Image 1 (tube, one colour):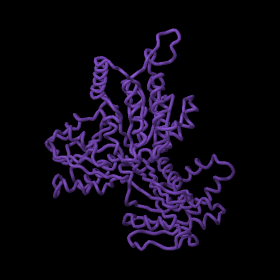
Image 2: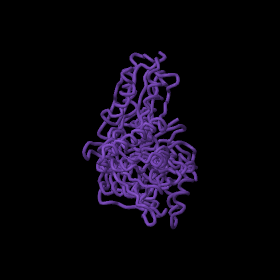
Image 3: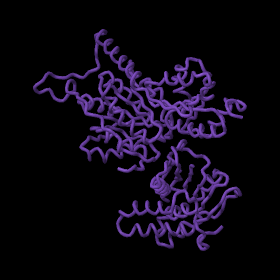
Image 4: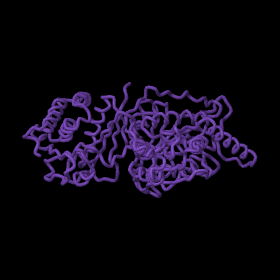
Length: 360
Length: 186
């Protein structure tokens, strides 16, 4: 199949089909409603289940139920809707079930607006619900990457028996770019015969639950979750560097669409002879702290500039990774405004000083 | 090498479709392409615009604040986007609906009476295709051959002689931009 020009939302929907998703429960919200529209048609075509629930609360609890029954299942929403799903995320994680949540982020807080934002980063990486749990979180910056990571999200959810979240700002949902599904590999079907609630005729019942009143039993589960997250940190780190060899004087850190804007700024600054590079986390939980340190702590790197469509969220992860060993700066836009390359060039020039870092 | 255009008009003029057809032609030429819609709270019939980027390497920022080319299909779009055209760039104006030009001296301006040309061919809905023809012919952002083959592919499956009618208005746009005295003023 040749490349297809697809809107991010539709491409994500098709990627879930390619990944073998069997059930999708949703409640519409801009800017991701085209995913639901697309799947309303596609899921029945592949023998899957499509349900538009009465609310995000209901949709997310349907995910819980379907996951417990061993189905490959997912939902998509946008910021306010994701907040409502936090409870179910906590339960699904507690029950150690695989599921995929996709958040096409709009600006907030509250109902906010429908334009792109990265304001849900902390919610995603810290967990939207209660209790001691994490989601594995991936952040694409192109439509092709959104496709590849959607498929990967299903594989990882199975691998860890833990929900995986994909976060994209509104532009990832709304842009059209060429995508290729040919190289996509469908994750193998999970063997869930030991725990799935598939009807207990002829066998002992399987019980999927999240209530453990015995402190030692629950602590044991807490430890098991912790071990999972430590394994994710060893095995699932993803990132990309651009213009970092040789090490730049000024290192940008950005993810998602913002990283693309930075890339353009980096290209233009380098044409002017400035020494700048980009570190782009792709997995944001686990966060690539070691990799970031390895780049940022080289003696040539004098400043680090974090750029986000928020008032500073990934900034906290970068701060913790750098341990105060490099001056850290921040440039953020909000309200649905996407930073322009020119703004970032101006910010960079302040830090590069009078030609400092440039060839002169 | 990266080239950009913003098509802007009101809802129903086929602005988004024109952009998509252009992006498809870029793809057919093996280029990197990105189509970015205006998405925001709009009422039916409100403003609509999209930006198409065609490049020979990975496209960075999808947001282009100073596009090389702008095609304004209605007056509010001209007012909003003419000031943003990059110096040395190109501004196309749908002169059927816009009776002014931009005061700017540092850009080229081309008048294309999209509605009149489409109406002459009894295809009043296709003003976007007239505009597309004029834009591709004038800017060379993609080749005319690539754009024509995309039109064949996209409209060839439709019933009746939609394809013929579409190609007809496309060529009218092409002729307009290539300096047909009848079609172009200024």
